Image 1: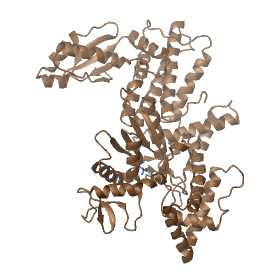
Image 2: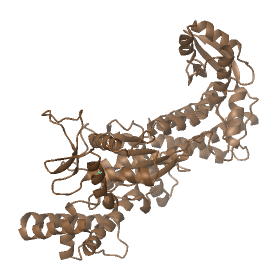
Image 3: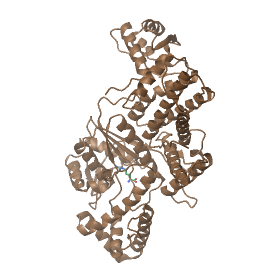
Length: 587
Ligand code: ARG
């Protein structure tokens, strides 16, 4: 299914053929960019002239003479050392957008990748029997945006929630629950996420206290670790109760975050148990890992501790236990060989960067990651408090994610209530959640993932500036305008002369395709966020300068403006959906 080409593609095609006609033997990329000087600027002539040992301005002039102006290109001129400034006709802008508007695939010009691969995205990976904190927010939000963006471009995406559901800490919990079997019971048939988590918290504290104070309990608890690893059915059944209870809680948080997480995609650490021994055997047999003081280790020339001694990756501890690394190495084998991944993406805190560096290098040496497979950690920065320090409560404790989300929803509801006088309480609650959660997601996605950012609710729910609320308002305003327009319907009129604000908006709408393609390929949701913010800003200017309903312009102008507005709304909607943010119809 061919999607509608962007204007930039059409111009690029014309320039490329002019380049080839000028220099038949060489290939050159015109390097087209949006520009303040003209609609587009082409910077590629410079590199080509250098390669050909030609004078760039002269070469540029020859290229220009081969470009036909008229239908699409209104004006093309040489500028600076050999750039080309290109201005399009008003007709081309509207005609091209009209084609996009009519396109039933509703892809807004975004092409499908020519050779889709399979990308496994490891994200939203909380830990069983533990509260989710603000650190888990970023992985979930960024990961989900990447899933949506990559799927939209046609990539096959496999989601993996690598939850922490295995380890020695379960011995104590299992033993305690066996001795107090009603500790996880629920008041009602249907447990809430809150209740599940408070059960788990209470049980964890009690088990910990007993473990620290009662030697006999400690011995019984340790035995359960061995039973668990040996696969004893009764021990596994009790362990499963913790996993199930935690999932009730996880799903409640994901639901609050308006994220779709599917049970089948939750493949936690325990999912790789069967592979661990084999992973270690393969590493040892191939010599990639060696025994060192009883532990199975992989060494790296360039990874040393502060004392200058090499820091190894430990795949099996001296007591025979397998750790985090053995699990991740097994997961790589599973994802590459069984799921046939061409790309492995890990949306994980930057503090785990060394772990992933060592794991990827080990997997390469073992031959599990070949040249045809890319493995990358999308290492994200820390969420900071308003004071610029890692986010903590006033008591110095880590902040519960649920509390933060509830506060965001509450603040957003207040904003919604104040703005819209005619909404019912139910509507305020619904919009409040959409605005509040949107605000939290947007604040996270609008800074590049690798950077830290400050969690500042006042700023996040502000109607002014680079916030999701601003985008949501722009969308709602367009929708209300379309409702008010009555029998004037959106229709493209390529014959009209455009206002500067209409041109700027139209050209930016056109750039959606290239933006989504690049943002997906570079795993940069923040580029899409920046695009959408500019779209809303350009719309605001257009709305100011180009009346649609009052004062009433001639019919064709009104129709054309409604058409531009409607296409802007669709673009906002699609873009925000890719970021996981809702666009309420009214605000
Ligand atoms: N559960 C881990 C944590 O909370 C993150 C897991 C990351 N994924 C992985 N494949 N290691 O820190």
